[in-house]
Length: 398
Image 1 (cartoon, one colour):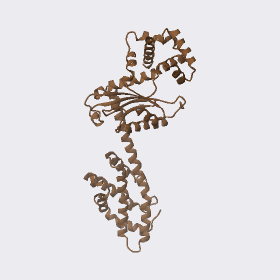
Image 2 (tube, one colour):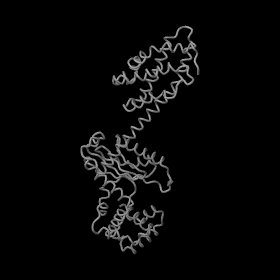
Image 3 (cartoon, one colour):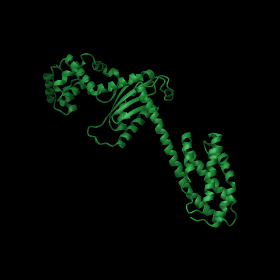
Image 4 (spheres, helix red, strand yellow):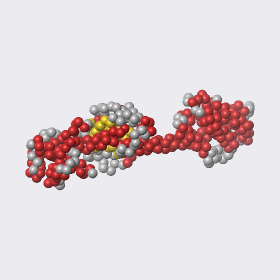
């Protein structure tokens, strides 16, 4: 849009005031904005003043050009936006400086205008307002991109530290332990996210990420801190940097957030040096509850103390696991046995859980007894069956 000679003349009369306007913006006008006064003096006097000077001069010298915002004119604005994002300046403050700078420039144009130049002033204001969306868009886009990159870098560092801590690779006294509030006791969780059997097996990566974000949010909200989590589609490991016990309804909250059943195993760690072992124990508790067919919920070591002991490997473990070899190719028999033990050997409860007739359950258990030699009606036979299931499950997990 070509401007009239009067408009170009009006803009030219403002050029000698560029440095004055930039100083005024950086040191007087912007001081009214919330949070601006706390910025370092060198940022105000050098970078912000230079950006204001660039913007004012760019506008005054380009009025009347076919393209009032030539290619590359936003480069400095983008660079400064990235710097402000890295320094932590709030986006609202950054955008307010641009908006207020526009107003100060309008005031300067108005002050040098003389009677009869109202039309020229309207032309310049029209161009000035047409510039603003492009500048705001460039600044906002760059700021958010930089913040996103910084946050992704921070998350990667945190994940690396948490993974190292869980795997025993972080030495005591690491500087980030204090920053993440992991210098004292912590709660370690193992999560198992169990999708509905009827759920779509081809669920996309975006849906999985959304579910895990909701789980992370639910964990943060439950404990009132940023919980350190390594989550995958089927669960993961979590460190809560607090000396606390998980609420009994935690699995219900996580299930609501994820839309799936959630199994939670919880172990206390007295300090960062015990996190690795606590994570191993929590993972093992989770495995045991699954192997024994225990319904999803909150599980602690005391809840499966016998099963935990029975699942420890020894020189005779392979012989106990082999007791179920005769029915290894009959998954329906193993599932019936697992469910029967999980329901305290209640045939009707087992039948209801599996959708079978109680007589069918009896027949399957009888076949297991006949083929394995395990007497499921005796306490010793029950203990052998539990140990065999656990040891076989442990072997398959290796």
